[in-house]
Amino acid sequence: MKKHVQLSEGQKLVFKGKGFEGFDSSDPYLVFLGYDSGGWTDLWVDYQGKKLMVRTEDVELSEENS
Image (cartoon, rainbow, N blue to C red):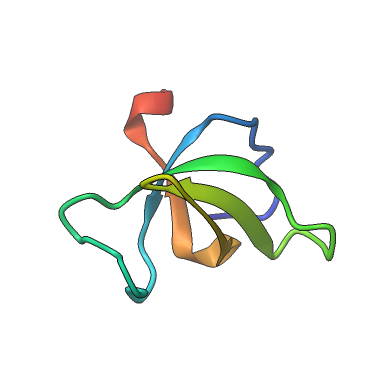
């Protein structure tokens, strides 16, 4: 995802990066919680009830936000 895209809390994202522990490729949806205080490269998201930090480049906006 481009860094200039401004996200709002609650927006739905699709994870496109390398899988992580507990990731289910049949359910790639995340909910945006906020930006990491270190800059625009990391995001806090909710994935299946777990709060995770992911890289901005590993997510895209879900079509459901359109």
